[in-house]
Image 1 (cartoon, one colour):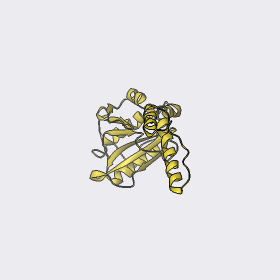
Image 2 (cartoon, one colour; image 1 turned 180 degrees about the vertical axis):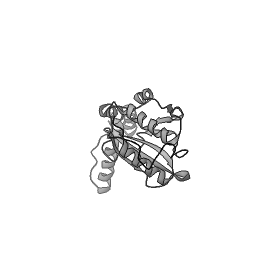
Image 3 (tube, rainbow, N blue to C red; image 1 turned 90 degrees about the horizontal axis):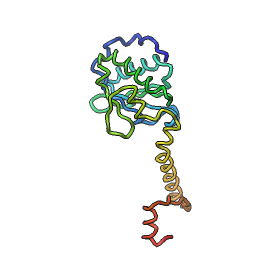
Image 4 (cartoon, one colour; image 1 turned 60 degrees about the horizontal axis):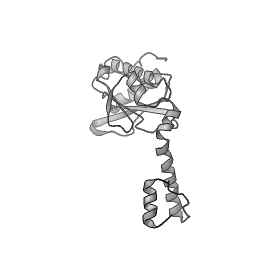
Length: 190
């Protein structure tokens, strides 16, 4: 890991009481590539200017960060989201932990107060390298194995809707399972 010095615009304590101690992982889609290849971490910052300063700090401070950005609009209470994108690799837990460790120097927070939430789960976890290693897929293949079924269904539905709107015959067949079989029997279809 390569870390540069703090951005000259930010010093220890400059972001005190401005960064929420909640980290969200893979909650948002990647701008830089396929979600299986790129992980998106996000957290809230009170105010647009501190969020912009933090994005600059992150982009200049870590060679493994693909991109960092601020949400285009304000969230509740004047908060903005900061997004950080990085390659989905086995090194992610250490990289994310290092980022937050450096961030707490700017916020004067205690890293043990930070909580992490992964994707669609409502469960919050303590922010540790071990926890990060357990709750998120660390390779593109593990991500695809976990979420491939959810990803493949939606494009078929969209294509079927387009075919229906265009008056083209829909040729997609439903999967064979107990539910679809009961529907077929009820409709008198074999």
